[in-house]
Image 1 (cartoon, helix red, strand yellow):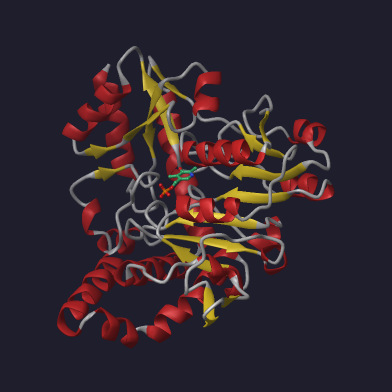
Image 2: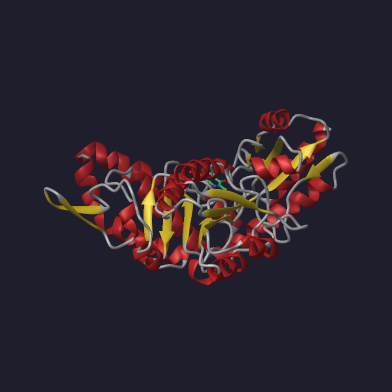
Length: 390
Ligand SMILES: *Cc1c(COP(=O)(O)O)cnc(C)c1O
């Protein structure tokens, strides 16, 4: 169980506003804020190199923290500056040749889709879309039909940017592995709100961000890749963090996931990310994910009961993202009117998840993503505010 009063007391931003945008960029707890600001102050006092040196042990321990969070080994974790940077580094390292195939789901995220289309174009490979089933999640039977020995990679979005759907991971992994394909899980919207255990799910690689459900600062991201999978990848654009420069003409790649890291990084933000991960682990991923799912279900049911309001979330299993439209009102007007009532929601557009939105004839929808620190009476206030828009 989450102690609501305690987590709300830890969250300075949640008092004056009904904050429903943790799928966009969440409110960090004060522990994260203190860590980041404290380190920036220390850098101002003694310089960034010395300040980082003082925290070297904590920075190193961070790999273990994320191994615990993600269900992998510390050697399988790397830190980056965003989920997209993580995803790009991984996908670019998958060897692709003429005639190879890559499969994506209908809820593929725009950044991933663009990158893949470009990589495939350069390699002479093809990107194909796996259909969804009647419930709206990835259709595993259709995936099995599509798989053959030319499929190098299945890109799976765990939770899409534009809805409460949770895609089935284990079934996708089993099917892909039988055909010899790798699975890259975009866990950007799941980590911090849905349990993600790499070992249990069997995924080969995953990417995630700090700024969303983990409540870390912006400009932070991470990846994980199974050791035996990494040895089959071909990381490009490696610097002297990912490899040692051992003689004028020679370098030696690192033998762990940090081969994907660059030397420079925001140390204050990294410390904030590690603090945020520890905060989530201390609350318990099971406890926080039940609280998130429960809050979202309350919100979804409340909105669905309003005349003229429709929710749009797909899938058999649902999480903390609630999407809706209000009659013929422009979703941006809904967002702006709610903001004027101290309720923060955002709008999800066809440009972020084109295949899925176009298929459903949607251009923009309102997205509300309540985290565990949103109080039940705040959800009721949001529902009443939406009712008042009609
Ligand atoms: C937000 C998002 C991303 C990208 O995250 P960045 O922080 O912008 O790198 C990737 N995938 C999904 C599903 C997202 O919602």
